[in-house]
Length: 252
Image 1 (cartoon, rainbow, N blue to C red):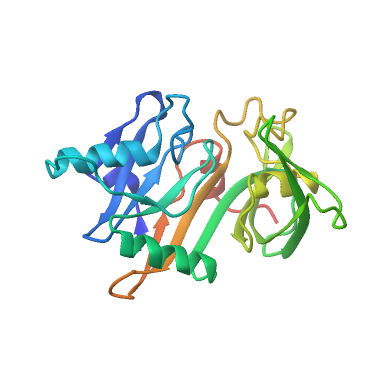
Image 2: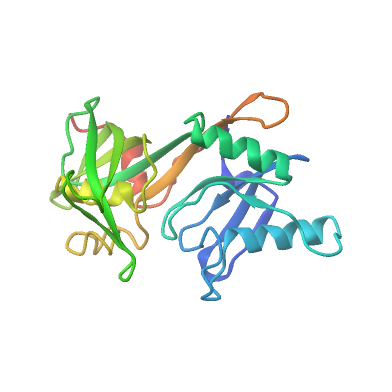
């Protein structure tokens, strides 16, 4: 099912970052849209985070006394928007985490990269070796022989290519095979097609295109932790620039 977040009535305003949108909720799980700029969980800075925001929403909605249980089973980088699933019980948290370990959770991203990544329909696998620089909160590519690096892999396909203000932009679909910090952003920067709006890994082509990084976790698929029903949450494409450029006919 494709979800239009503009039509959801369950919305939580998060200051200048927009709104957290509740997409689905039952006794076991809750799925929500995370806007760009909101943390997945608190980092001690006082900035808004999904875990705290949704706990507050549940506490108020159900008039719950004491603390509210909400399990964080996966994360999205702060500047990345998209779908997240949370566990409302310890059983659900355990079973969702097991699906992640077994690679049964399907998480897909769409992004806008600088340049022509390929022709429409082209696909490939990227394999890199990353090391995390925790002091500066960035990831860097390194050698496969290093003890400090971790292998990261993803599969991508080129959905569309557009020419805009004298340069090509590519709309790319990504399926992660591993989940490393900043993985998608670093791997596309490594192949000389950095993401539009990514000031951390792309400080030369972002101006004039987007204020937020053009990367969204648009699809999340998993088995319901109790009913076992396969659930797929897919977001409609954004209608803001530069995403709206890709609603017209593609450039071959």
